[in-house]
Image 1: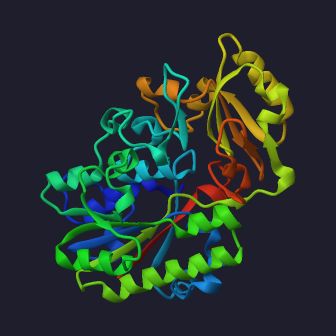
Image 2: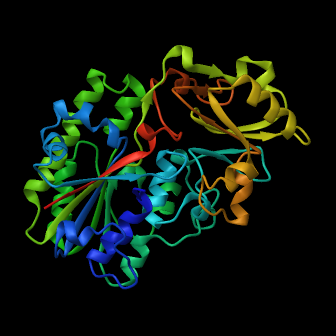
Length: 371
């Protein structure tokens, strides 16, 4: 079994000498003795997408060929979506523990759907996500832990849930991001965290393999090359991702709001197109389960909340987080996506690339170590 995104920061913390941290990934063997580590998460850099990326990314091509750094396959948590993965990275905990169980979630006791990327302070981040982060643990151990993020991310609920405890360094639009991360790494020993969304944005908007996506890959590669060139002698660069992705053609798209049989009995729709959480009207769960099982046969796995939890999809789930999961959980297989045009912004249906499900092209992520 590959390691998990949950293992990355504990292993980095162990390499930096943090008490109580376990190097589950054997990172010390890969990077040696270090005093500084930059961890850069490239949104959408799926392990199985690396061969496609390599034609426009000389550093990644060299890593793939085995001539630069070391490449290991890891797995993200479920759903394979950015908010869930970022909090699993930051806390080292599975989604059932930290509670950020999807891209969007129903706030229990209400009909409200929380979109984690637009979340500010309601619900309060510290109660919605109660698990301590590794940034807090490093800080408490006296090891500097900084996060270099676009200024629009600072103060958001998702940033607090994933990275609280970090010393935040905001970057302005147009600022040379790689240079800023490198400068932070030089400034003091410890952990410096960086994030780039360009590749994932291109995958969603234009599709994996599109010219837009290849251009984004080249930009990501240039960012990583700059960081490698600027690494101090006592530093390492660790590159990873939150998920991969796949393109969804028109025939594979189902709009639940266009089919009365799929709409029936549903109170709230959450999740995202590859993993749907259906919160049902009182007494309607069995009927919804039966209708979706029949209509999506061969295209999705349809389970009750209890079945999905028992299957271990989320890891152990805290009692207080259970109601955030739908009464019915629908996980798409193949290249199917379930749109909800009356519940989501219209641009969701216009996207070409998706992720969230259990396909290895969505869940496998790289761990790249460079000195």
